Every structure is written in C-alpha cells, then in structure tokens.
Length: 310
Image (cartoon, rainbow, N blue to C red):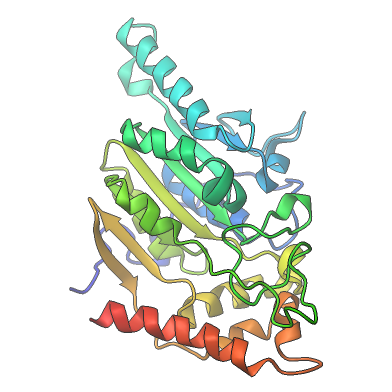
C-alpha cells in the first residue's frame, strides 16, 4: 500500500512560525536540533519538554532557553518517569478545575540514543505499559555524544567511537550491531511509532500531525547526523542525512497500533557513498580497505529491504 500524506503535501504548507528559537549552545550542524525545530512547528508552544541528560542538555542552559514553553531537566534514565509526573499533575489540575481543559499541555520527552536505547529503556517500557499520554523524541546520533562520542547500543557496526577504536584485533571498529529500538517499542504495542529524518521535512511534519490524533505513547526516532561525533564538516549535515536514507541505512517508517508502513522506499545507493563522508568510518577505506566490513554493512541493508519487499 502506498503511503499518502494527508496534511503536509507541499513545503509551503509547513508553518513558518518558529517554536525553537536560534542561538542554542548545541554544535553547529546538529541534525537532532533541525529535527526538533521541524517537529515543534506541529507541536506548537503549549508543551512541557522533559529533557533527559544528554546533548540536548545544552538547549536550555541557564539563563537562556530557545523555548516559549516549559522545560524540565532529568537524569539520563528517568525522563519518562518525569513525564509521568508532569502528565499526572496536569490531569489533577484539570480535574480540580484549576486548569481549563482547552489549556492542557503536551508532554514531550527529549532523549538521546544513550538514554533511549540504554539507560532509560526500563523507564520508557513502564511508561508505554501504563499508556502514558506523551511524546518521546529520540535524537539518535549513534553514540554517547555529549560526553565525547562513546559507544552506545545505537552505534552501528563498523563505526569508530572513543571507546571502540579500530585496532589490530578489531580493524573494522565496532563489532556490535545497532539495537533495533523501533521493534522493542513496537512489542509494547503503543498507538504510534515513527522514524524521521530532517532532510525529509514533509514526511516528518506529516508523522507528527498523525501522532496528534492518538492518545497514549507516541514515539519518534529522529536521525541526528552529528558532525562532532561522526567527523565531517558541519555544512555537510544535509548530504550525510540524505544519504543515510537513500542508502537504506535509515528507513523511514511508522507503526500504527503495531502495523508497520514504510513511508519512503529509496532506490538505494551503495552504503559506501554514505560511509565515505564520515571520519568515524575512515578506517574502513584507509590505510587498508576493509572490504569484508563494507560488504557486511551492505548485506545487512540488503537483507532488511528484502524482508520489506516480502
């Protein structure tokens, strides 16, 4: 079945008003910030952001904030629990008549992949199981980026991080496979899950508009191309982010009540084009080309899309 956008069909339909203001302390070229900026155009200002410790800690470093709404900071493993407290407080205020229902606020968790895939996974599982009405926005830069790009469960095979360097024993770098958090979330049967990439803004905006129709957990995995950790020029973020999708390494998809639909089917460029742009994969090409590792990455992508085609 062909996926059809219902709300956002043309770029000019994306709201012009900005809800994440410029001037944050995040790195230049941060793909996660661009994804959040686009998401906020649908979410608006009536939001309480619950921020797990991570790169986005720098979003609202005192006394500055890019948000017109509220921002709450939590430890790396407890943002979903913080979201539960905020949601409960809002519900109590509404029930007591102290907050008009039409002035209710959205609760949005912001977490990196270290928090999402690892430290906060149990807290997130509990929140989904309790059917907490909240959004979860994961900016996935495939490493513990805020503390120096250490290995995370989201780090892909072959990447080099500060705690998984290439060596004589492991010339290809990281030997683990990226954890499939999308399927872990889907096993909990939330009403809505999606992957997004800021280089595909209509796809991203449409998914946030769709999610707004559901009550309960609404979870988003946002590709967060990271010049600091992935080792490329900040000006190349759009090209890197696009190649992640066009090579098939970052599928764009959604799951509504567990039913998965791929929202964009790329013609699939060789993964090598994507890998070559980033310093974290440079060891796969020089001084000695690691053909086995490159073939392994390509084979994993091919296998995934073969399963999609059935």
